[in-house]
Image (tube, rainbow, N blue to C red):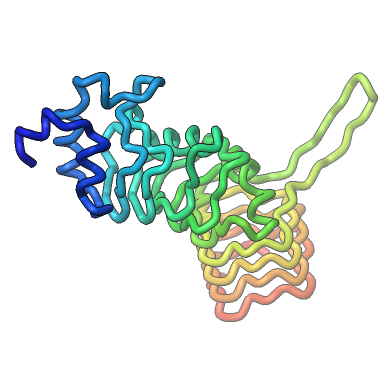
Amino acid sequence: MSRLLKKELLQEWLAKRDNKPLTKEELDECIALFGADRKNLTMQGLLNFKSADLSGQNLRGMDIRKLDISSANLENTALDREGFLHALQLARAGHHSLSGINIEGLDLRGLNMHGADLERINFRGVKLDRVALLSILPKVRAGRCNITGADFSGANLSGGRVTNHELGLDSFEFFDLSNLDLQGCNFDEADLSGVILDNSNLTGATMKRTKISAAYARNTRFDKANLQGAILMNSDFSGSSFRQANLDNTAI
């Protein structure tokens, strides 16, 4: 990139690239060259990368929170948690689609993704907990979010007792994970007590030392799942399939 670019506005320079993807190195240089000129900033004070093509780039470790990427091409762009949160906020404001963003392997535990467009996002290896799962569960059920291969290891997904002293109610509420595609998910050491897994597909899931107690898992597929050391007690597994599953040291 020439030093002469200091005289050009960022959007003019981006337009001259004929929509070529902007590399991470070029993005760094753009921030350094154009960031000091207020003419390159949006009204919100963000560096204007609205028309930038960042597809296929690995931007993990880069702080993009001061960049306006509201209509940038982020197809298969790898973002870290902070970068994804920035993109998520823009998406919630209706300025961006998260479709196609690369979040594989990120730790998104505790993150509320409610209302976001999560189609065409691969959750393989992404660490999720109860909060994160509840926020996307309606999308998963509607077929607009695919969580196969997600990482729920160590998560507490158990049902629990619900008490309302004012109304005099005391009941047990099951955590409903029925009719879900959970193939290849990691549930190692997760607590699935009091869960409804009826008709769900856990083929190839990793469930070492997973606790499934007082649960309903009727007509559920555990084929090729690794249930080594798992606890499968006081639960209804009628009609379920365990073909080629690893049941070594499993408590049944």
